[in-house]
Amino acid sequence: MTPERFAKLNAALARRQPDLTVLMDAVNKSHNVSAIIRTADAVGVHRIHALSTGDALRRHHMIAGGAVDYVELTLHRSTGAALAALKSDGWRLIAAHAGDGARDYRAVDYTAKVAIMV
Image (cartoon, rainbow, N blue to C red; front, side, top):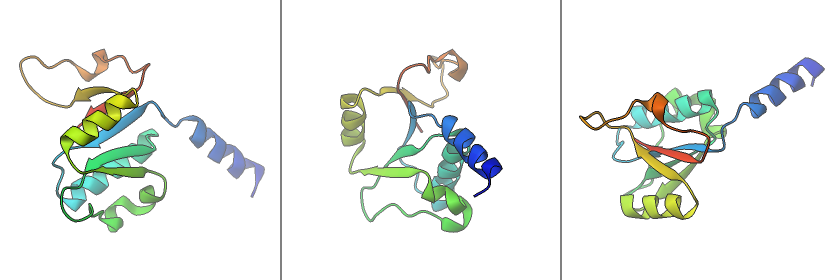
């Protein structure tokens, strides 16, 4: 491995965001799941959570590409189980929801562990 390639890999690892995760609730289409995995990888989120109430959650490998190799997917049996697991691990939960009481995503304090529920 060249020194330049090694430096590039180290820079990518330094940009990872261990204090940010995503919880996919009722994301059922494999294309949408893959898009979320790909986006998580692009912004440095290395672990995401999802509900798998029936068969194992399917990932659309053609769209997610290599991102599935770098983004860990933790499956939960129910929304309650997912929320309890995240809360017990110290994650602050926020929901992506448009409504009258919604806050701008830029107003959220991301200096602590944040789980965004979509």
